[in-house]
Amino acid sequence: MTSVLMRVLRKASSLMRSLSGRLRRSFFQRWRARQWKDKHSRVFISCWLKSTESVHGALVQLERSLANKGIRLTFVTDAPVLVSSLRLDIIRSGFFVSSPRRYDSPVPDNVAQWLSGILSYERFWLMSSGRPLPDLQRHSEAISDGYHYWLEVLRENRPALMLVWGSTAPLSQLHLKLCGELSIPVLVLERGHFSGTLMLDTVGQFAFGGFGLQPQRVLFGKSQGQGGAYRHYLEWVKSNTALPYASYNVAALSEFREMLESTKKKVILFIGVNDLGTGSLLSSFGSWQESDNPFSSTRAGLKSVIDAMNVVAPNDILLFKPHPSDRGNYADLVTGNVHLAKDVNINFLIENADVCVSLSTTALARVLASDKPLVTLGFTELSQRGVAYECQTMQEVPAMLRAALCRDNFPERVTNGHAYIGSLFENYLIAIDQDVPCRIDMEDLCEFIVERVRHCG
Image 1 (cartoon, rainbow, N blue to C red):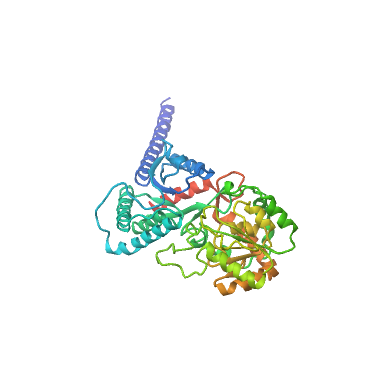
Image 2 (cartoon, rainbow, N blue to C red):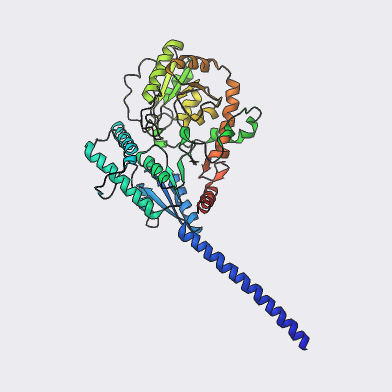
């Protein structure tokens, strides 16, 4: 009896020690997790999309997912659909640099130069978008106050990470600069190439980026034999009729359909870009000088194509599809064989064109998926990838346009274009809708942010 009791007592003692150890480990795990959450629980994200889109819903869901993992997401935005939510943590701001209060304090000398660049860029942005220009002195003071305000906000909150919306808006440029000075890691977030997607990059947006979260070398090298592997991505793109600016892409007008279906002439489509949003006009990375790129605007690009057509295709048709945000007047250029297709469905235009021409825009991906010869003007994310007929100078446009019309070395470009589309879906784009076949979805983005925050901590 005594021996049995002793065995029971020893077993009970062992169980108690094991339970005590587990409780002790559990306590310290919870304590460490709480310490990590207290110290590294803040992430900032900016969003400049004011019209309600599925992107906003995806970002709200991201906020919930991060909250469940102990990370607080703070929005920097003036989007009504986000600002109106009482549950979200909001710092209300548009994409121009401003401050809710005056500081009456000079900026450091080493800051003054690049801050004056943001001032010049913001004034150019205001002027180009038709907004009134404020007095230069008052505007300079507002930019200075904005610098002090956001420096104070970032210092006080010390976010473990900031997701900056694009790399070209004035406030985005300020945030990127300040985060760099404060050693706050950043990721650049933007609309993706197709509806239902976002792009995420460690450097900048599109042509100015480092190509997503994967090494850029994934798009270099030959891609022969890979076309079949990407066929399901191409089929999805061709079947996807959703458009990011649906109200500006109405059904094809009957006059264009009749003209395109009856003509025996070649049809060249020039796709306009958002000159400011794409950073075509000014550098996005601190040189603060006008780019020496001769194709620094939609107008400059369109004019170069018209001039080239007068040489190599004087009797063919040029369709011009401006970007929805473009308020420019092109009446002086839209004459003769040049037709303005402002509200015509861009997918319809691409499918009915013989050659497409553009600067840096997400529409380039749709052109590649449609197996159309593409002429690019200036530096784009397709540069040096063996995909497009590339023009770096005005003098190259006639030759490249002729090559595209003749489809010189086109099969190899098609193959490389398919590989590029595949790499977008596998390495660059983030699906915000379930039917989008990206390898990375919003859950993956949440986990990436969590790991990034933990690593930085």
